[in-house]
Amino acid sequence: MRLRNIPGSREIVAASPSVVREPEKARGRFRELFGNGHPIYIEVGMGKGKFLTTLARQNPDLNYIGIERYTSVLLRALQKIKEDPPPNLLFLCMDAARIEEVFAEGEISRIYLNFSDPWPKDRHARRRLPSAEFLARYDRILEKDGRLEFKTDNRALFDFALEELPKAGWKAELVSYDLHADAELMRGNVATEYEERFASKGNPIYKYIIYR
Ligand code: SAM
Image 1: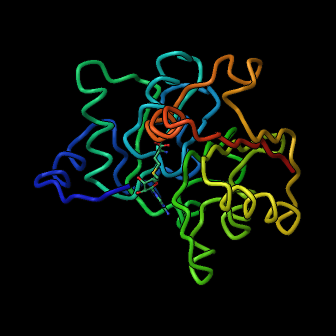
Image 2 (image 1 turned 180 degrees about the vertical axis):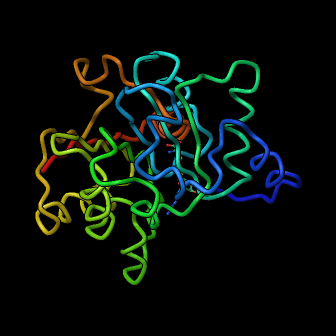
């Protein structure tokens, strides 16, 4: 994601009722924040929020939380929902490396990773969101039968992500090397901003669904 500093984005994000400030204080109580007992699905590295905003409108009986590190990017998601913010959608502006400080054990029912930054240098492998280090964090916040779904157009990142699974004790329930060519998998697929861009160039989209 190309980063431009957008003046005022920090203040707008801080003032939005859709953004949880000091999310550590809500640890274990996110359902209370939503005011219902519905399952919570999160997207880590949400970007501009099209995927989660669409899902939140489609599924009012599920709660969604988008995690994005940069206020300048999160601002775009806030602009999308400005007129009619879905009550089942919240955002956190934070580094996902701290995810366990924010969610209690088993508090989350599903995790989405979409078009995560590839961090191509070996010395940055631990920063990749589908790395074994991150899978260990997800393991602790995801409920026992929960699933993690990952989509990318980056073959090297996808191969890396598959290699990380056994190290971290996860198993693949589904692996697709061409999501958009599979009519059954595409039923209900919500494209992200990056997915639209890369699929329209003809890039294959890779997807896995994993569990442990
Ligand atoms: N998921 C969106 C999509 O598919 O269109 C955005 C993809 S973009 C390549 C990756 C996003 O993840 C960026 O907005 C980046 O700031 C965010 N991100 C990367 N690492 C993160 C981390 N450790 N914590 C929070 N956000 C992160």
